Length: 269
Ligand code: A2P
Image 1 (cartoon, rainbow, N blue to C red):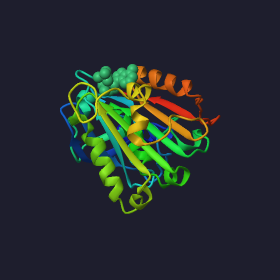
Image 2 (cartoon, rainbow, N blue to C red; image 1 turned 45 degrees about the vertical axis):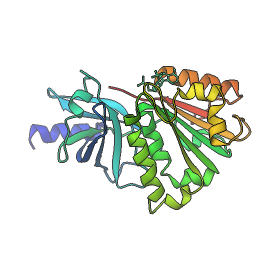
Image 3 (cartoon, rainbow, N blue to C red; image 1 turned 135 degrees about the vertical axis):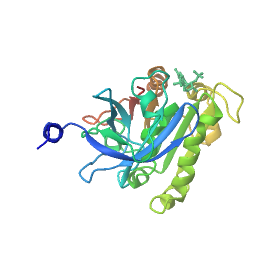
Image 4 (cartoon, helix red, strand yellow; image 1 turned 30 degrees about the vertical axis):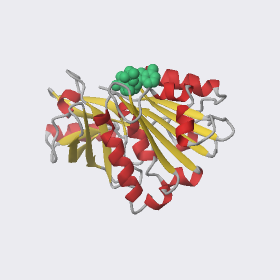
């Protein structure tokens, strides 16, 4: 047995990452890209969870948390990433090409899961930037449509070009052979931009506070009796959105104690 064989065996025994192959890479803007990798047969997760993803850099594994952007039924795994200038991982990860390998952690986890919410009528998925990634998984999970009558995905970015991933995601979800029909009349996509002129402008928090979000969608204001929510974005976006949900009477839940909303920061590395 060679020394690399024994190192791999040790990593496997101790639950270290597996080595996966890159299948596809798509660059959406000069700051954003997505990639698809092989999924080990034993890899199980719940829609909305995250996992460690990484590369071997200068001989050492470097991993960061990434939300899984594909649904649990998919045969491969999708991820959506920002390119951080000088970022220890993303500055290398942005160069991956099909056929390259990446490291995949073995233990997906997270709070943005359907089981952390109590039953309700309407599910809001509030996202900014790459915070849309866990919702790319959830909006393609049949369970989401079995549990809610209406699923409202909001996505706010600085610029219109940064909305492209979400636009493509929603369009392909509506046409998906497995879940497309389930989304009909249920899945709604609400976008805005904050740093250039666009069809709709403003932070999601401003649109909520002014009531424009609810007026545009033709739905009543937030109500703990019917509305459930998940939030994913920067720390500041989460804090501000969470405060508005709490003001409306919604309480934060968890895997252990389901309630009306859950939060998770969009990871960057
Ligand atoms: P803004 O351009 O007004 O800061 P970022 O890339 O910085 O995470 O921002 C992504 C999007 O999230 C931007 O549209 C940004 O708006 C918005 N955003 C940033 N901070 C907040 C916040 N505290 N509440 C709501 N939206 C926010």
